[in-house]
Image 1: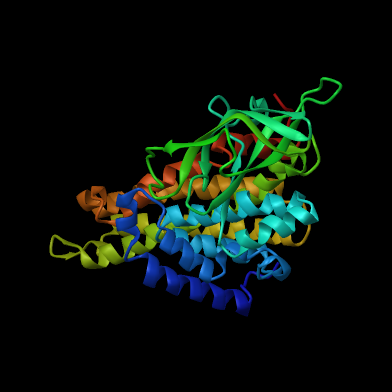
Image 2 (image 1 turned 180 degrees about the horizontal axis):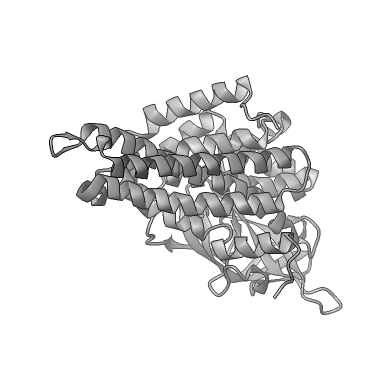
Length: 384
């Protein structure tokens, strides 16, 4: 495994970092206060080609590897986790299922606008009564006269209510003729009668990420909107989550790195007892630990991404990277607030936002508890 980024990846990383520092950093606090996804920023991200990174050029993408996408997510999260999760969900949850499991007609129809950032899509898995127990799906879809008739609801669905959201792929129970429960994935275009996007959630963090509850009441879509094989929707989405966990680890590393950067800067500016607080060992040790954890988490997600690109098993490594990175992100955000003292509790300072944004990383795309279960299972331990 080569630990160095390629020259192309290094140049790309510099480009994204410059974009983040010039266009995102000056506005992140204002966008957060508005509690609304800034579509101008989404357009700028699209112009930079971020939404099409892992997809072939024939569908509007750039054919980059998965690590390159993760680098973009990390750079965004250094400053703005809401935009970082917008990118991660748009690519990993909105477009990737179409690329991996869609028919050629579906790819031709849906992928180009997603890859160019002209459109966004969401994936409806989580339901009000089932988060970690995603297999307990209650949303149903029955086949009637060549149409799927969908009823149910979904919760916490990212990118589901933006002005450019075109569809949401939902998992639903589609009972087989034998009566055995099966879960399938179905594409539901925005504007379909009976498909209602609820109001935005009042969240602890990710204030300007777009997140909604969705409801479906006798929603009818054509039979050909089935994404992947019938009955394979849940299994396919678990494959999508393996990739998503690497990307969330990258997001967590970006947030942690942002905390380190802010603490180094603040400790050189802030004085107490006649000297810079960065000269105190208590502060030095805290920041050193933050930097160490961040670098270890970065190595973990880089390795998981490398295994994926090599076509080797990576489920365990993805879970480990996501688990460790998300937990150290929370640690780093908490310690960053402590380093800043009272100012860390004030919204004018980025570490306050990082602290609010960090907690969801231990929950979304697999809780820390579920990650430990997956790791134990991959180690061959007996299932409970």
